[in-house]
Length: 305
Length: 252
Image (cartoon, rainbow over all chains, first blue to last red; front, top):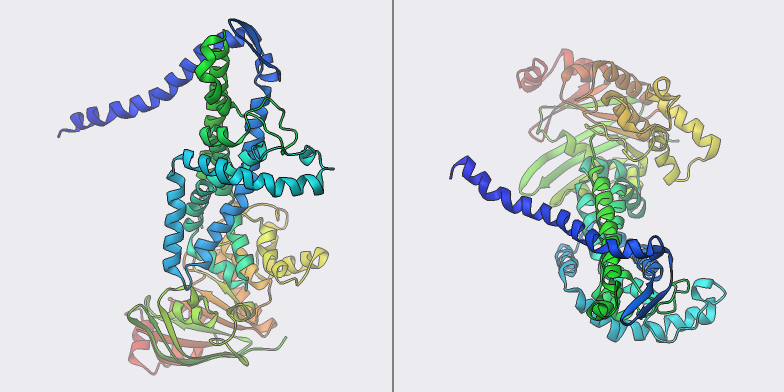
């Protein structure tokens, strides 16, 4: 095949895939404009959600936006220590003595990144939410209700905190993979230098993690982006209630679960579809921003002697 | 702190299937610099990695023989204990890139709880002066190592090792990729540290000139075996072995 033909063969798919992102953005923006025109900034700032069938309702996305941010932040905060501990475990502890176990462990975590998210959702709704509702949430309310975050009596296990915990479980493998790949690239000479100082494994791992710091930040951002965009698993456990997530033991909403729940009947309510699309636009922007920032941090991981 | 003699007896090392060190015996006395020289691939680096147990990191490495650091049996002891008494400088300058110049030197004393506050400041200054780097960095201790030249980075790596005041200082071709000015400074540091701290310094080098310049004793290794060992003057001026003569003349 000639050079020119080969270029012609591989160029269009690449152009199409990048064009899709641009088109996606344009279409979402186009359908958002009527809602933005009608409600202005109130669309983001108002907590009211009052649909009126056949007439213009009142729509504000503040609660689902807050729910998305709160659940994603909880997810990242819980997932980081899990992911970092797993990296140290598979890279430092298992290779000495139990290399086979390490292979199995790594393979399992890698598989977890590719599981259909509905599987997590089903498990979350059937097992995790009831379990947390009967145990952890009761304890938190009984013991720590003086803290505003735990001040509301939990009714069921379907809460914003459950969404955060389930998301943490879902994004841990992603953060793990990002950090592990950078961790493995740390040149041997730095490992030897750290050990030659007489460090214990803990101190050694702390120095290595310090070197992988850009990757840790990147992993956190990419994990945040995934958590903010996750839909079906969250919709099954978050409670889907217009309720500010100021107390973590109450049900709430996220942007993506709102879209999933309301989309089917949105045609019955004027402008609701446009409001939902603007929610989607915001998710797209959050996703793009967290990924770009994450990639920028990853590029900073260079260990030049 | 007590001077420590390094004594290696009948050391054999296999990595994978290959026999890297074949019955190596040597001594390195305190207060002196012992140079380990030989062509590349002769097992020099492996020898010093046995002394501080970094050999443990190499998968499939098998070690037999005896290594004594004073009274400490280095091959039986806890490797952390061994490395605590030994410092090491590597061929590539490798200060930790995410730590400032100050923190790179302070990390060892901090980990081992040796000094804090002003005492730590003094220790860092002492180590940087010992490594002949202080004058160049004293006004920018908060900078990161990537702002330093290669030679300065290597002197920073040396200062990091010195800050723990190791009884045994191991150097693995520390000036192989370094500019001549830094090379001279590092060589001076090494000799001064051996004399003033009564430390045992072992430096691996592939250039006989460097061995002649700075060492008190020379160990010449070829293909995993000790060919010649003795006071530097004797080895350089009156080599007993034909191979040593050839190596000194640049023929091996």
